[in-house]
Length: 343
Ligand code: GZL
Image (cartoon, rainbow, N blue to C red; front, side, top):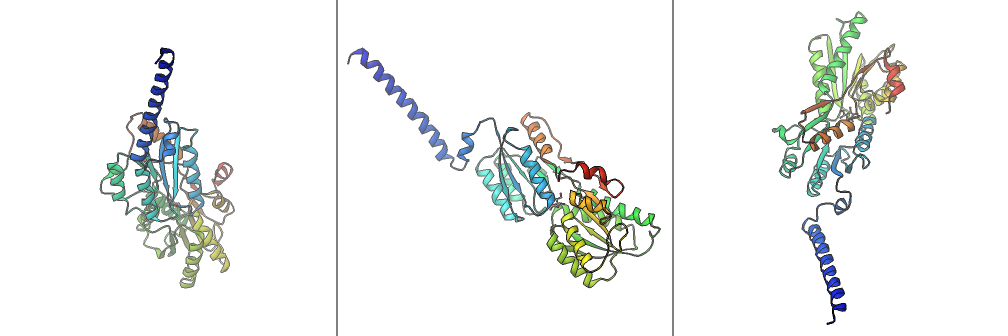
């Protein structure tokens, strides 16, 4: 074959061979590891792939928490986030975490709907070499190497703040030693928010034998359930002095139930209201005297999580716990928060 034909033909053969090898390599990578989200491979390799399992969208607080993590772990900030909403079901969170493992994400971030029940799936994540960051709520595990850190609130401290505020308020009213009838609307049974807040409040209540905790009912952090449960409590007890409601959404339901039955609430009301979360709508009710005190639980945790991931990427050591900053709001100090609150 003449040279002036041979070389171009050879060049074409080599080119075709090289392209075939590249395509086969790419596809075999895909077919051998079908579980890794192929789209991820097509993204910029420098993006950090994070699987996020959010427990649900049950409250104003949760919406703000989701917004915070999605803003922080955005593509512009160098992340490829795979987000899953478990709709309050633990089995959905476990399924999501298993899916993140099979896609070989770089990190898993999740807020456990309840403390128990995640040990085995966290062992699977650890075996797959995927660091897990707990956001908001805690998981109850026998080996704390199953998660690298927890970013959230000190829920027991929040409960203590609520009890401490009540003790000081009763003292101010000179009724510190009078019998006080209390009902507690609890958040999702077995969640670290419910466990911690209950524990903290009970720790203070133990010092006040004149505090009668008439009932503690699970209202699952929702307005509807709280209104229903508060209605039942008002049928059972005629002389409730204090409602401790473990989040603002439940407080909205409780106040509605009380008002519908002719009770007044808050600073000059018959029934004192202690709430948790401190979302804008509830702080407005604090400002208007309808709620006596709101113990802040800060949902803006995304930046903390992102900072932890960046530290891990740089090979730096991190703490086992990062608590977000939180305050206690009453009519006296709520105005500044009202003007600045994003949620
Ligand atoms: C608290 C968080 C709780 C909020 C509720 O850290 O887990 O869950 O207090 C939310 O509003 O539903």
